[in-house]
Image (tube, rainbow, N blue to C red; front, side):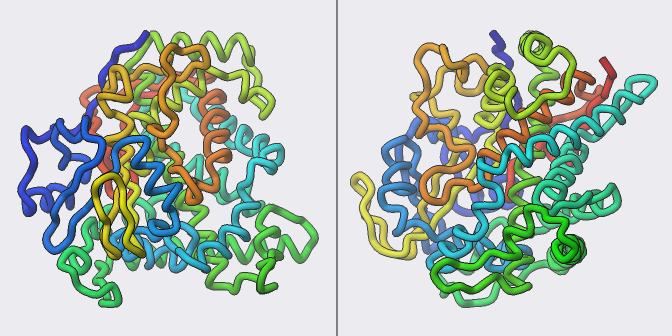
Length: 455
């Protein structure tokens, strides 16, 4: 059993002052939590004119995200204003009637019932990358983070939009998403100073340029999808092009369609790419885990390409990925703004206050996890003793706002991992430093230098 303890930011010895915490949060949100926060069930943090309530136990998570979800369905001001230039009123940041209408329209695209259509395309794209890597004559350096981002962007484009994205578009959109994350504001000072939400937020010019680059690629993809639909060459995007709100009978207009396409791309390629990159890093540091993974792949697949029917049989493969996203949750902060007053435990949370669930804390909580900072995939095996509380494990969120594409992302990750791991071995490049950084999502820095060796 692995006991490898992968890197995490230094934890402050004691709670930070407001201004020290804000300064560190702008650089890396993960670095602001002292050790004691990994043991608390619920606590508060005063930040300028606001109080932030942190739900950090199964019962408080259920209270906020399930039982009282209508009071806490609105995303935080920081998340809404940070992503609005990119996503507009897309599903990820909308709320109320807009969110409910978009959920009805968008969910069918990435629903589990469509996995028999998606899975072969996922495996095919992963197999093409494996073949390119197998073609290396000797151990070759790659950026595993960029490689996984290109792969998952290609998968999203083929499965959802019915066409190949291609290396040029893939590289462009992945670079633009990375630039957007680097430049985005990490704190919403307008909200924290208690000012009205309608006040405009300044976004750096580089952020707006990155959003325009992404929109340009998506506009070209959508135009191509429309042409395919006209010619009768249907793809999954035709479900969205043809969909009408069952309550109003209205389809999505062009802007709403692009906003949802941007949401699907961000949620579908960014988070899965980061999680796969973390998985490769963890495997490279845990030879005994890698050996068990190889044994399962040989036993179940015997060198062939995996199919959807194999996914339930790849038990250890899934456990490896589940443990990777426990240690490095793709979205390590779930923040909601209260739309009405509610009570959680002894705290009365006033309308407008911020309630956060922090998977980074909860999934390393000292009470709910044994060896919380160690890489131990065996904890996710079906026969593992002392199974974890599923409400303390939120890589795809929980409740009505659970990730609509959770089944898609999990299947994609297992198929990509199984396909590539059979063909190549990845090792951390000599001298490479891996440091988790949280901006909008949790990344291993801006790159993950690794060495690819064909098996």
